[in-house]
Length: 188
Image (cartoon, rainbow, N blue to C red; front, side, top):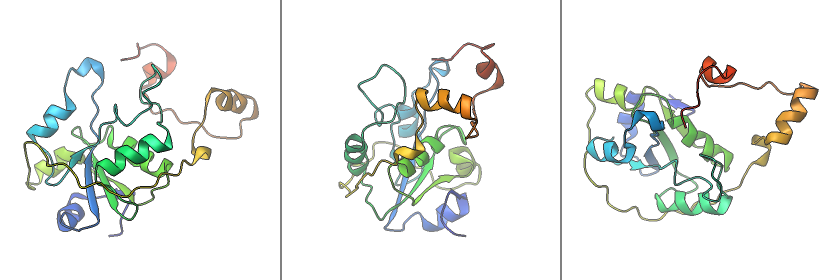
């Protein structure tokens, strides 16, 4: 099986010790879930994984959640996790597939194509009896990561309004239908 954009648990188990592989838990829980993703990571994670904090690896200058950080911020924080330009990076989350794709998307947004999402995430990994680690993870040796923002992959409010008139691009909204229509409250 080739690498990315989706890898299976068997593939990850076979490649877990590869020198160029980095595994990241990119779990995020919505506020109403009242769960601490980082604490749960310490309780159980894939061996060798690090916690990819989506709240930290975001623009800290805005009050809006999860806005894209600057290339410099992303580069610095990703390198601190031990990720280098040539590494393959696999993202998973504790729910199965909820927030791992955000980590994958951010890597690709900043020019790193060698990223994948673990199919089924931690629940599938555990259900198949693969090894689980717990506790603190030793500090990573800093990686050498160079971020290049691919701005053509982002759209702002002006772009969206222009698209309403032009209908040039297909827009997909991954939220539940109630949130899309405004019938359900926003969970933040």
